Image (cartoon, rainbow, N blue to C red; front, side, top):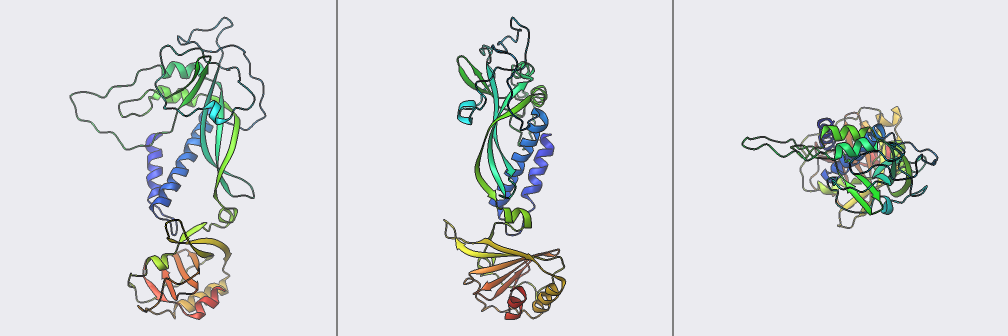
Length: 344
């Protein structure tokens, strides 16, 4: 799974969406990574949103030597309460290797964050707490294994891989400790530990929306919420092609209002969208045939611009102020009023 996850992250980072810079690609890769981690937790921890129920068993569940208690082994820790916030379930601390003298566990949790679709309200970053309801004994047995030391006297290399987190927060009468999976030679989770983590079952005991990461309009239309003012960014670049290329339908038009961010960069904020009809695409293409290369064209005064997303790539046109159109990284041209009128 690790190699597959690494390839997915590399693929995301290497395929930019329109107007997306490297930080944006990396942020999207991280969101995808969190989604993969969440899916891993869902597939491996059987996480489902269900009404909370009283769990079987009332005492401590697992001793450090993994021997059964007086009533026999159980994989259902007794709950602290029906709802446990993140700061209680998973207090901030560095995960450590499971100690040999780990006190009897009274409860165990997995915490994290995930992008979740909220109907009618876009996509939010949601923090969650999952209580472990089954498989804890097997996990503790696997987590007691020592880290694998690197081989000596030989050359070896480790792949650059992001591994899914497998931290579990163990509660006992002596406090809470975050434990990690024992590591292999490349700091990867040992296979037995990963299998034990995947065998866990959990239930959700707490969630909290942290922030919206994508608006409803962006989700439903495909327009990005923010798009850099590339016309202004490319102000010093000469045209590299003699004319603009007609757009291949379908064509989505995303309109943006230019604002300055905290660093003073010009950023377009999504303020509208529509799909062009066949007649409108023909009108836009007719106007594109009339654009001209003009080095005196001002590309830094527009207050609004349109992003035209077509099969053959995006085209950016200044709508209010400015006079430019930029297309597919192929250059920029002077846009006429006929082109703006075709997009009005």
